[in-house]
Amino acid sequence: MNVKSNTYTYIYSSIVVIIVATLLALAATALKPAQDRNIEIEKKLNILASLRINANKNNVQQLYEKYITDRYIINSKGIKQQGADPFYINLREELKKPVDKRLLPVFEAKKNDSSFIIIPVYGKGLWGPIWGYVSLLREKDTKSNIHYRKIYGVIFDHKGETPGLGAEINQEFFQLPFRGKVIFDEKGIFTPVKVVKGGANPASLTEVDGISGGTITSKGVQAMLDTCLVSYQHFFKTTK
Amino acid sequence: MDAKNWKLITNPLNSENPITVQVLGICSALAVTVQVKPALIMALSVTVVTGFSNLIIAFIRNTIPPRIRIIIQLVVIAALVIIVDQLLKAYVYDVSKKLSVFVGLIITNCIIMGRLEAFAMSHKPLESLLDGIGNGFGYGLILIIVSVFRELFGSGSILGYQIIPEVLYQAGYKDNGMMILPPMALITLGIIIWIQRSKNRKLIEK
Image (cartoon, rainbow over all chains, first blue to last red; front, side, top):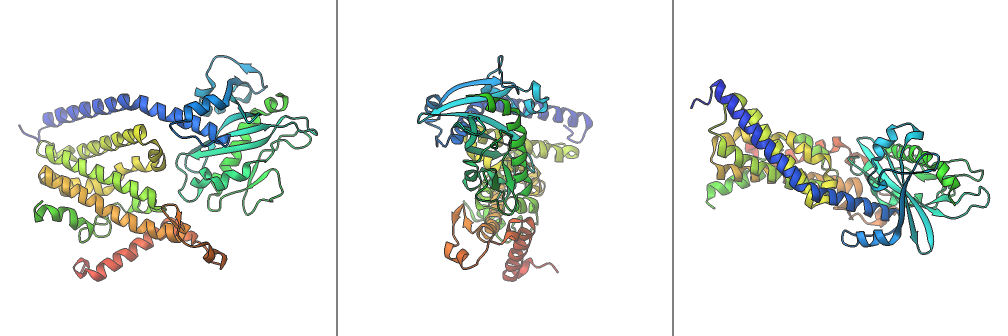
């Protein structure tokens, strides 16, 4: 057989394409359940982490069922919606919609007799998506009369931010300062957390330190909290 | 293993190093060497891909139509990388998350295609497999040296463990932010090439 002939080249490339396509399709189908399970486990780990609970792969299911008491979908007016499982809502798609059409997932949790609301957040970093979960502690504020005002814990992660710089948003030193910040001021006006470059005021209830060298990712976190939390503000204000 | 085959593994570590001598794979050597851990995992993944793609191409080398050989090589590499990526996602999810885009970028690593063209197309499968593994190790060795320097002086740690003592920071020592940026990877690489050539004078081009 002449390996240089046109016919041979065509047949050869067709066969290679078919073999490789079959192999890849098989690999993708066979590994899909395992990959989906990993994604689900990670989601649950993140939800628990925002509640300051350190779970691992083995106890995540049990702890998730213990602490997460309810989950549902609301719209931007804070009214419950039907029709989809909040756990599988694709926040990225929801954020593309106009605010009043968004389906917003809410998770309720109870830990040590305190109540919490956990919501997912999603945004853009420097190189790709960033996301996370924010938990709010139920604690009535006498001045503004809002119950869900104080951030209890946050967890952030990213797809491909620069290692050592923007990628540090998934580290504790960046996430810890968010605890105890408030998202409504005394008059009940929405005040999203600011990620500040060059030193946040330690006494401030709305500022945290950014990452030097990771300015765009830090700003991305701020923008993410702003756009995601703002759709929930009615819900936070009215929920008792 | 006889001496000739052994050389296929050891030569790429020094006198035929893919990065410092063949000057291949520079781009990824700059990108993944900010910290040691991603560098290590990258080195391992590249070794797996160079080894297997060399082996597969060596098996089918006589059947490949010469006019589309580069395409066939690329298809083999891309398929292997995607399978590796899928396996990582299914079985070691946390590692796969750390590597993120780097795994996909193995496809564009010039070392792999360079070795297919230069070696696997004209050698037997076993020799090609060893050559692939050797070149993966040679690549990994440089990656690890560069990343140790960059993480130590850029972040004060190695593999995430703090190495530079807190006392030094209090005395006014600061991490060198420049080490985290790609230019310092290139300069570190230049220094490694300089040291290697001053020790092994045969490598100096006339």
